[in-house]
Length: 308
Image: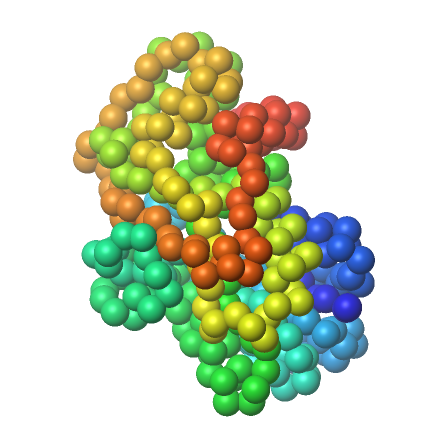
């Protein structure tokens, strides 16, 4: 099967491109050098030229709490334009399959835990990433409407937070677990006695090793899209507190210092655990335990990321 992957130069996209190739598919990894996803004409030319059987949309403007809070306008506008362009252009070019990669931030923070797919659009969104969440919901609904109205296998997958090698370790835009790894590595190098934690450490997050997700998408999900509901949670199945993640990373990296809690800082949602039981019926299972995944990621970071 010929597969076109947007955002192939990014974290998730690079893993998807590799695993689709390993699964025997012909892969075209679309990067910014190939086409500007904000430009529908450029995108149309590329999709017509490649003529894929499936488009996987994993591109986007992403970041942690601070980046989202400072850039709600761009996180909404850029992501909704990119998402709408990719899904609508794939439809116009007669691509029969599409996988839209979303985010657990689409869930209202006050919904009962764990989140299930029917809770989307049942309440207000977390203010710290509202723009990004709105863009993801809009793209999800465009995907759903096109698929239901025209009988196509266009589906949205909603992963939990992801981590692993090739993650974004930039201090201004990294997500939580990559940020923790980077902060503790710097603390070790600079022999700091404490590492700062935003909030009181009780907020809970669900993290899935990126390789587990990408391998399942490439080997199994791609062949089962027509059987999937319009949106499908794909998460690890359990969560941990922010303090737990800091302590686990400190243990893996042999950091002996302590932690300082910045209680005035925002923490986002208190909990973001998803119900992935439907995906499990289609063969989904996270295989990499947290400590193992952090060890792999820390080793990659130490060999590939330069400290500022």
